[in-house]
Image 1 (tube, rainbow, N blue to C red):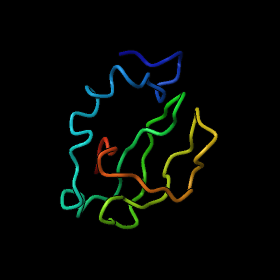
Image 2: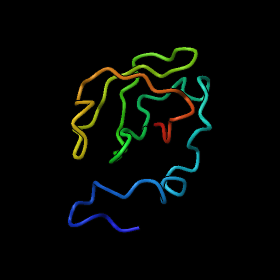
Image 3: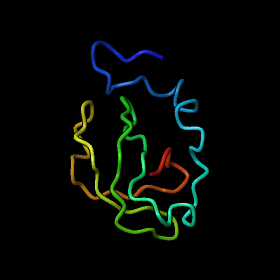
Image 4: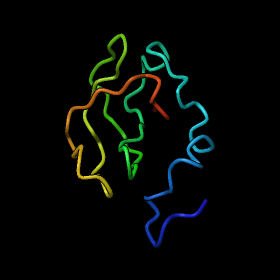
Length: 93
């Protein structure tokens, strides 16, 4: 798995996501009780993995603000509020 071009931030999604994020889709509300951020993949065409600063944990979603400045996508933007279903969470810290 090599970065695209000279950019070490952008990695091709899809075929390597399961290797990069082995806990993808397995997170629960209880598992995130002490987490500060989560990572999720955004986009329907081009995709980008970005961190979300957790504001609260709802029954079905993590609600927070985008903590990355997108490189590929126009939306969402840094600081935008987003809701991520637990099943789409790739990583947490």
